[in-house]
Structure formats: structure tokens, C-alpha cells
Amino acid sequence: MLIIAGLGNPGGKYVGNRHNIGFMAVDAIYRRHNFPPWSKKFKAEIAEGEIAGEKVLLIKPQTYMNVSGEAVGEAMRFYKLQPADLVAIYDELDLPSGKARLKTGGGHGGHNGIKSLDAHCGKDYRRLRLGIGHPGVKELVQHHVLGDFAKADQAWLEPLLDALADNADMLVRKEDSQLMNKLALAVGAKADEEKPKLEKKPAAKSHIHQARNHNQPKLPATGPMAEMLKKMFGNKGD
Image: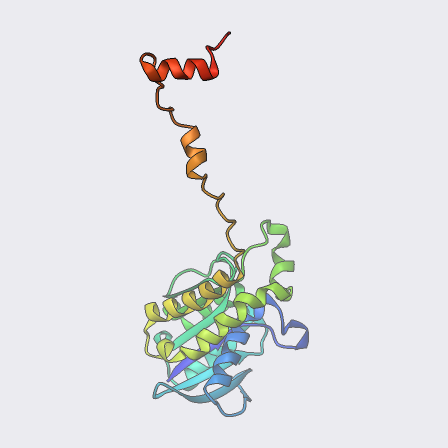
């Protein structure tokens, strides 16, 4: 069995928070793969189903973010699972909005939910970090993390979650690089649609205009033609 744990805070006031993107990701997988109704166990909401022919337990800890490991660790012990059987999905301040990274093990990066998972589950589990961007200054971090996604964020958030749900079989089969490509393409394609059109380049100068900027052919200085031109236009300075 594989446990896919989405991290977040329980309760209606936190539903739209950036900190709850892990819950959102698990909910998207749950809907796409027709899991049975959620039930309550292990201090969490859980749903057991199948993806890519493998048993999968979706889990959303209800212990609040900072002690997420209590719920996930209890589930792992019940099913006699190892850290390699766990994928944690959570928000990442140090990634630009919409970017995703997936790796096994590593540090907690100051994320309290991951600190808790490390303490209760071991460290060698797979970590799917979903970027929520950084507000720029440390003083605004808490407000940013516990603030709701802005309306403009839906341009990348919905394609990201949809792509993750559509390709959850890759997550189960540990096709990590392929999954990262799918997520990047989904968000990148949407970003391209949102980009303003490039300004048109100035129209090319006409051949006549270009010719004026080049050396003109020299007029004859002697001979019948020169004499005729002098009679028509006269000498300069006359």
C-alpha cells in the first residue's frame, strides 16, 4: 500500500489557505479516481482505493499542520509500512507559485508539518512540494501562508491540481520525472495563454526610404550629360 498524505489545517476557516494546498491536492486525486467516501480514523480523514492497480490510502490529518506526523505515523504503524511507502504533499514557500518538486528525503526547510512527519515517520519518504511563492519579507510569511489563494492564482492552481489528479498513476508507479514534466507542462501552457501579446516590431522601411540612406550614384562631371545638367539646374552657389 502507498499512503498519499496531503498536509493542511482542518476546519472551514482554513479551506482556501495557501497552507492547505496539500489537502486540495489529495481532494483532487480523490475526486478523479472515484475513491469511496471519506471516513475518520488515525486522527485523520482517510479514503482507501486503488490507482494503477495499487492500493492507495489518501489521508488528511485532522491534528492541525504542526502535528501532522501523529496521524500519518499512526496509519503507517497500523499497516506496517515503511517511509518508502509514503508520499507527503505540501506547500513550499521557496518555490515560485505553480512550480513543483518531488524527491525522496531531505530537510524540512522550516515547514512544521514536515518536521512532525520526520519525527513520527522517518525521513526517507517522498516529498511533493507545491510552490506557493514567497511574499518577499519574513514579516509577511505567516499572513501569506494562512491567507487564501487570490483569484488570479486560479490560473495556475487549477491546472496544477488537475494535472496531478490526471497523472496520479505516475506518482504511484514512482515515475517522478515524468510526473514533474506533466505538471510543468500543465502550468506552463496556462501561463503562456496568460502572457500579453508581444508588441509588433516597427514596420520595415520602404526600399525608397532605405535607398535615401545609402550613397547616391555619382553624376557625370564632364561630357554632354554634364553640360545638359548644368543648363537645367545650374551650379550650386550660383
